[in-house]
Image (cartoon, rainbow, N blue to C red):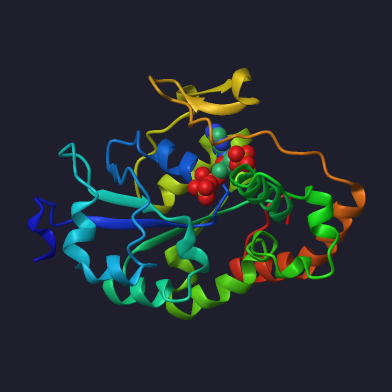
Length: 258
Ligand SMILES: Nc1ncnc2c1ncn2[C@@H]1O[C@H](COP(=O)(O)OS(=O)(=O)O)[C@@H](OP(=O)(O)O)[C@H]1O
């Protein structure tokens, strides 16, 4: 039985399905202060891993413990769900009522963020400009992922638009309380996360933190980004033009960077 883990009967499930490097960790951390929300501390990789998926829904649910009796929405984030081919169908079969939260940001900034993470893992790495100057740059995963529409099309085959909510990852950095208000409304929750819960940390390049112990994200979030050449930016802009137009149409959203 699904609810054997002392889960309340009215438990509902939301999943931050992506997108990688768009602010998924910040979003989950900020949501976790809501009294009705219980979150998974790690990325569960349940729906995008055949092995994990075999453990079944009971295992999945057990990964998200309820700590307070007021908690009745459980949320996890696994950014790779968004681009994984098997995930939408698996979620649709197991949790057809799940509410899907998709955070996206300017795909160029997202690509740089992904690049910085890759570069940190390798000793010798070309500059971002060199990396984009190659003829097959659109085939590089960090560039491809930013064409959100191409993956969104698959999600829309399995879920109606009203089961999805799009978070503007750029605005989450500048006015997090606004994005969180929209998410709380989408989840049918009273708004309990406010502007007063945040401050901007000059020691973290001005990123917002929660006013509580350990309220900032870790050192691997909010890294310094390299300055990129105009030529590189123009090239990426051209590539993302049609992707962004398609995103706008499919998601019916109009974020400032689209
Ligand atoms: N409040 C706050 N503090 C720190 N960082 C913040 C915050 N809000 C959004 N961001 C941005 O989140 C980027 C990392 O995104 P993710 O958490 O989705 O990355 S991951 O996919 O889980 O690796 C991270 O990317 P980098 O700047 O490249 O480190 C940040 O730009």
